[in-house]
Image 1: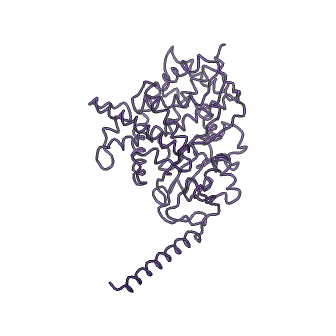
Image 2: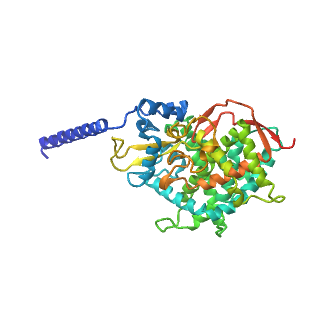
Image 3: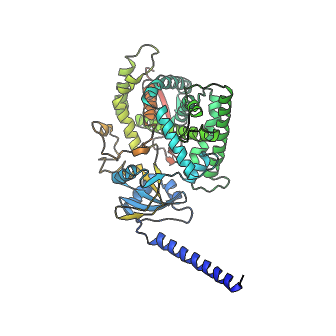
Length: 471
């Protein structure tokens, strides 16, 4: 071939690539993006958000840039943060229209096996929500309440009653994870539960960190923990298959026997992925919710006394050894208002991510296709516009019609509202009932520091002195 012709093709290719890059850069930097900062290269503003607290990070940027929307860089991705009830409503209302499911790499690699594409992540999310909604429908939840109550009683008798002082956070994690293993996997032996719990702690501590897989980093520990969790779950699945029978009393059996949307039985990896998603949703946030509900009950005697009165009215109507039921839960209205106020002030989950599937505008700004979006509870939960005297603990906010729409969002909203919301409500109320009817709580570290992983974590584990009633 003529060398001049080859040279011409090479020049054309170089020019084409250069023009494409110029166009790409021009598009990225001249689009009418929301105001904000991208922070450091690669790291973005992730480290600052982690160390300053998500609440401080969000509030500072809302004040500096915009109270409605701003840009940043988190977890290695260009990110648009939507703010306020209007931002929440926009995101929740445009699911699968302008936005779609997206999980950060720091979450997908430890949780999804094998490491898969975002298409597989979306498939897992869809199957997981479908099965969880079916598994956690009302008639099933009613049947879970006596088991929750029985396990809570056993837990307090074994882990609390023999001691004068306990640490609430690790014990709440132990209880919620043990209960989830029983309901989702049919596992009761805590030695077996512990083989899943220990690596699961590594996962939840690192899934919202910068995805740098170097020894010693939280992300590296999360990846290692994820591999251990997958290994243990695969053993459980193999053992269940050896039984050569299907029991429909736990989530695992249903996943193993049911078809997915392609009408094919799920393979072990898909079953594993969905079980892990269910465990994560039912364990980490719920244990944080329980922890901070008890934290405020220990701090605020007047609130504790009103919860105690309500719960004792229920307890005195029960026969000796009689377990709680659905009707009892429906009577715990003030207790649930207290739990909601605790979740407003100390949300167990920070928010969620989406990905723009097309260019769209919001508040006059352009959000480009492919950019990631984030909604965060702190854009509304402590805004005096929605909650007057936002730092005051006031369960009365949730009486009647409650807060303004899209302002109280601990469980998200729209098509992707957490399918485990009612499960979390039952688990929290059952645990509250058992604790307050047995003990008064005295905080031992009044101003305990809070750090943030997937959920808020008290650095000392929320140590309390327990005072059994009647002593």
